[in-house]
Image (cartoon, helix red, strand yellow):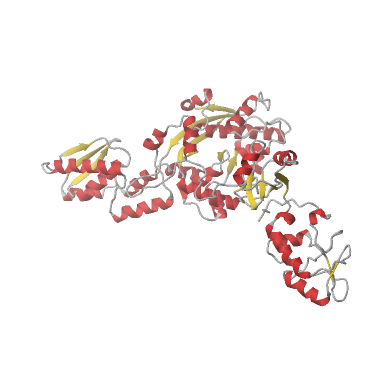
Length: 583
């Protein structure tokens, strides 16, 4: 698919980030999808023909929101997206003038109620001008016409054919209309009795169901795809799925999980070729390319089975043969052809591996699906918490690079943008302010972490180190101050424990530790306790949760009553898990 834009900058801070969880990313993307629309839809149908041959029919559909009657959708254009598609030869005249209409179920319900009410309103200025001209012509003609005489209205197109007929029939009780081809309407003068007979005819071209079918436009094809329940293949297709749901099914729900359930109900088998190719990098000498055209060219030209006689033969149908001799990147029909071709070639590699290097002659597509089972319904995700969205179950956290923290020294007024431009020549990070002089860095590449730590080791103004939640999180720091400052620890504490001033100290400790935590004691009065909480306890405290009776406050070797930092006093460095973000 091609869009009029990807990520809206409105409202502020709506741009997706590596700091986002899938649900947070979804809420941001949902707002963008509601602002932008689809400009071109590509569909490639792969038909299996023996022996071991797939014939491809590839199609491009320029689509444009329905402007029928009172329906007048609004959408936004992104300047960068327009420039990008124009560079690749996108025809915006076809999109704006000849785009096929579409609507979702909510819009169709509104139009149906409008038609049942019997009223009609034309919102389009262009259509209103054409309507006025047609009414003037008919009213001038009908005054002197006899019954059964006819006249022709010409140069109509699209919904104008319906709108002219509906308006004339409602305004003049002694006329009947009939379309002639795609651009003309015949108007006939009839008696009231004849008019009633014609209105009840099942062949009336302006029956409500026919109007709704026309207004649905491309949505009729979408519904046919849903009904077919065939595997839906795309490349980096998450935004595609959001637009499919919003434009042709229903407005996107607020709930991320509901969106996943709806998509899985519509398309039970999803295959994302970006997630698929990333999964085979480790097992095959496959170059790490992510661009769809590059992946296709690698599979066609490398030695990954170029002469295997069992490899599926992909043949373009006669009407699509230009794709065989000339690449057309970012033309939706061509991209759809690439997606299906990449799927078959990678699936064949996996099938050969699973069968010891050779596959049976002309394997059925079900066998290809069998070797892809781990990748089914796994859609590539660019956020930090997971590597893919699981549309048939729970999203599984992935191992990701650790967070970095930047300490700014002697460089006043620095912002996230300044940090980004300082680092972008070396590597790319998503940046979040932690405090006045500290920033969090997040990358999805481990090599970027290593480069930043190495090259900024001795920088005069920017000190980059691993982010440690115990040390750097304002939430945890604030909580620790609440726990330790009221305790009046004695300076004579031992290496393992700190002395408290009797029962009163123990009571004060219980006052600041969440209910349910048990405090370690060394005598009957409970006068000895650990200086630092266990890692599991601190995680619970940082999340504002009560850890329960199973945890205890324990001592750490080498701590003094002054309260040294745990990461400098013998504790292991803490690297956040995939579901832990700086707060």
